[in-house]
Image 1: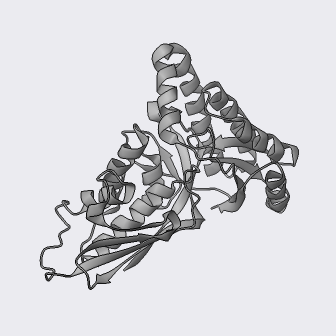
Image 2: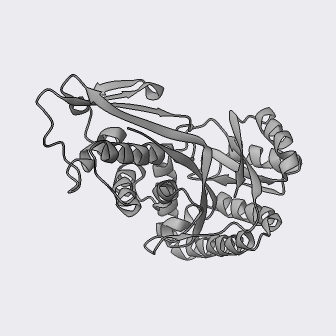
Length: 312
């Protein structure tokens, strides 16, 4: 049984979404996490993930290991059981991913979603998207502290999402396709650390931080209306505004700022960091015919990789 889950990119609202403001995120299908589950002649649950040089039996891994955490949460689930398998029979789990790790594209959540679906299908069980989303969110908490839940939601449903923490999921319509270029700094984006640092700032001056969160939330709401109305050309200025506010939250970096400048100087309508920050990715809104030019400029400015994707 083989399953796949896409990457995701946050268009607007990162960090503020942790504090109840809306965020917009979309799936990125050009890169994805893939999981295949097969029978194994040897007992146990064997995990092969060559991308991270992992070849191990489940019980040899720490319980908080990202992959072990998914499996250990899955088997106690009321719809999932290994009961009835013959003694000595086991599972072989093969994991691969084309999503850059620790880059803000949701690589961990994508593997968790694909792994959950693959195991459930292999065992002949049916989990709803909501159940998968809830299971993967619990794993996200282990590794990101106080995550918003947006990664697992967008990746599970594989649709553009308008997300407010604690509220029902809203997918939204893209009135007219538009193109973005994603630039990877190549620096690991440690979401848990940046989220924790913003939490400290919020604790020290709640009034100031709440005002910034309000501004970011308003940008996200305006951006949704623009996308639904087919007015994507208006998103560039909103990206620039959002990036400036994220700089105030201290979650950008010199490398991200340099890539944002390079994109703007090469004809992007707007650009901003995306995700946890301090590394990882930035995004730029571009006219389709300028996408390659902007992508090349990002590489010249230090990007370790780029992805051109159309939001439809």
